[in-house]
Length: 197
Image (cartoon, rainbow, N blue to C red):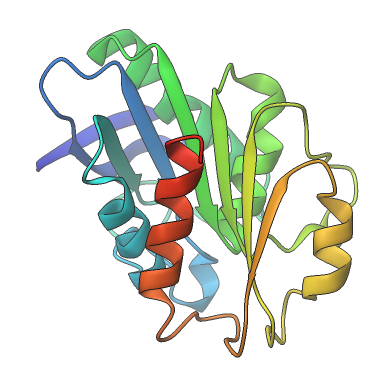
């Protein structure tokens, strides 16, 4: 695992990169809300990294502006979209990555979704995306996996599933917004999606 610093529009961004030899595909992982303790060290993101570890897909988790060692300050979900774009452009330019999987959890899922129109991503994996908070975003047309918690008190599972009607939606029973105890099911679901099952 490599600690890297990537230049963004508001200053440098702290990131952690794990890239298998000769890999041309990398997943970019966007963390939950910075004002509620979200960072690249989030446990749901760690589950996503584990889910991808058995493939030839690399992973890059990063801190949005103003989090950890990343420069700048929180920008209410505007500049954070620019952060996602900066990360992807760096991977393409500096690491020769040709295939991007955009991933995010909660606030991070919303940032990934809103960055999609500006990027040429191959797939997207969104965990508990709070789409009701930004109705201007649309699911898009790339293959997309949406993972929801049946008892999520922040993201309503039925209405979110309806919003993503063209995506592959997987609702995990008896879990809330934090997905405690759901690691195995998340890993199996992500692996199946990535393998085209």
